[in-house]
Length: 342
Image 1: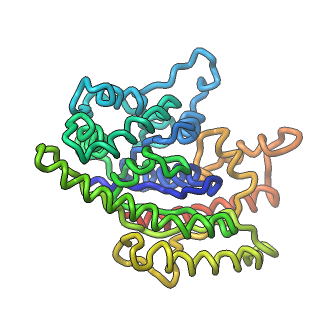
Image 2 (image 1 turned 60 degrees about the horizontal axis):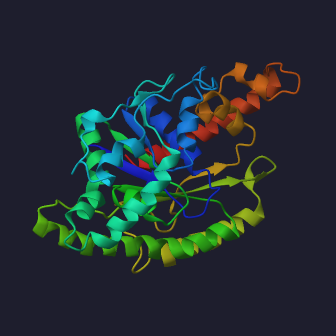
Image 3 (image 1 turned 180 degrees about the vertical axis):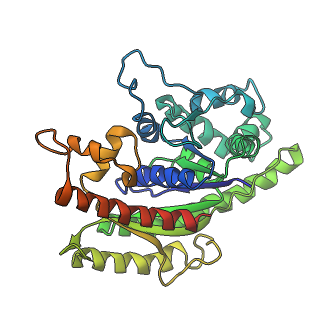
């Protein structure tokens, strides 16, 4: 059975897309069949996915595969009640077998209006809006079943708008990436309440779907865990004290606002005392180098270090070894996230 997961935070700059891509690559390298669905109109996951192609910078290059906006447009326009998965063309990654993309589209920003209207009117007798309300979940489930994906990972923007609501409610599980700072602390205070309100509203809408023979979907994603990342370490080992203090504050807030009474449902085995399924230190130059080649951060090749050196020479010996160590440490944390959603 396909597991649908998203990494989400209503605060930007928490390495959400980067982490999602690396989890997707890791899962594909251990034999899982994985689909990345780029639901963020910024299309960063799509850019990262296609960076592995040598022809991507060619101005005449047309992105292969069906875009998510073009796929759903017939439903938005009322031309089809449902979207058939057979009409969707997916693209496999150049380097990672078993990793596919349902590519993003900047025009998908228009879906904010379509999904927003459905969110408001699906409770009425308007059958068009009811079908729009369930179309994303239906399509993801169909793709998962017919294409035999083990995981579908949905990338969303740092928004609380209709696109984010639609995607998150269609997921089975949710992972929240965090940075140990004041801004994430404030985000966590609101996040549980926001998503719980979406879940409660979905239950009301679901009741309005049944009399019209529109099958509702569960709409109750469970929190699989949180990921603390981008923190800097002192003397190469311990996190700096300022980050530790903010992480402690965020931990308290997770238990009070995020998973406390009236908060998010949690996955079985969720550890309230230590809600972090992974801790990822700042990877510095590794991230931009990996992005240049569409690679996972833990899969940077020695030849790629030419892009990091001032004279274009490749790193060797004592200069390359720290890269290998940081990549290995990063891979271990990505493996923890992958295990948590399995």
